[in-house]
Amino acid sequence: MRGLFAWPGSPKNGEPFFRDRGTATRTVPGQLVFPDPAMAPLPRSTIQAAHARIAPHVRRTPAWTLPSAFGHDGPVSLKLEFLQHAGSFKARGAFNTLLSHEIAPAGVAAASGGNHGAAVAYAARILGVRARIFVPEIASPAKVAVIRSHGAEVMIGGARYADAQEACDRSVAASGALRVHPFAAESTVAGQGTVALEWEEDAPDLDTVLVAVGGGGLISGVASWWAGRVKVVGVEPEGSRALHAALEAGGPVDVEVNSVAADSLGARNVGDLVYGICRKSVDHVALVTDGAIRAAQVLLWRDWRIATEPGGAAALAALTSGAYHPSPGERLGVLLCGANVDLSNLAEAAG
Image 1: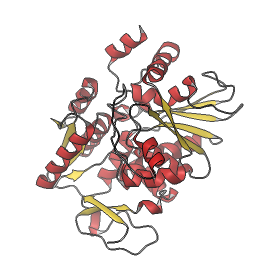
Image 2: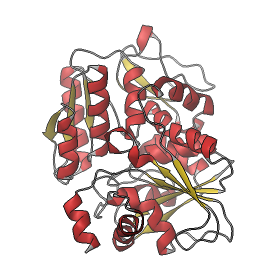
Image 3: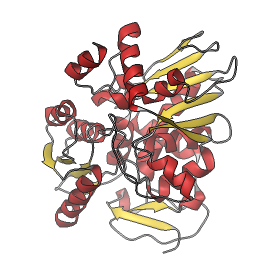
């Protein structure tokens, strides 16, 4: 099978939902097929189809454009995706995957630092599907509480995200559940790309967008939508830099994860799909310190009364810390992507 990478799943009507773009291939029954990374980015038509599919189930979050802000003399468009169902953009990819496939009685399974698990749990509840979510020990208690509130079964899958993914994989192999991957799946990437589709409609003249990166599903979707038309800049914590390391090394590599934002931006390896898209469609990745992330998180709360988790404030941290230097008058977009924050921790950080 040339140019394909597969996870367990079951497309509707016996047809492969994700077709290889431009190369004749065969598919394996009962498997969800992923494209050859060399064929990235995803076509905009794939993202448009995902948007039509998930529109009845997700919120169209606002884009708030400020004439100047955060020390920049040009307009800044904030995409308020933290207002999404389950507290983050992840609901988009979760719904797109669940709505694209027949689901076995075992339901769905996912590994997550919290936000992906919350989104899968929410989508499963809305669609009447069983969900089992594997979380690492570092998962935020606030995020685990959100997952449980949507009726999912929560399993502690090890110390780090990669350990939770391995536990999830073993469960899927034994049960036949549909694995909903947080980033290494075209259905996830296409769903996350609908953020950019909406954002462009509401703020059509952006020059650059700043996007936080964990496993890279969000930035892969955003970069696929805007490929070659808007500069897409990734933002990662210095202590959790899987995409930065992959682009530097010329391929996916494992990294150590140690950051205040590790519960949402804590992937150890972005994988081939994300790397394949981002190496062609992402301008570069800016690294930010944990201190800069905390400062941006506090600024959003203090000046705007926006409560975000550290990962949700990371993209803004690139601007406020100087890790990204916009040109004078540059029309800048900043994606605020998650709000599943422990309010006691935010209060402590805000002093």
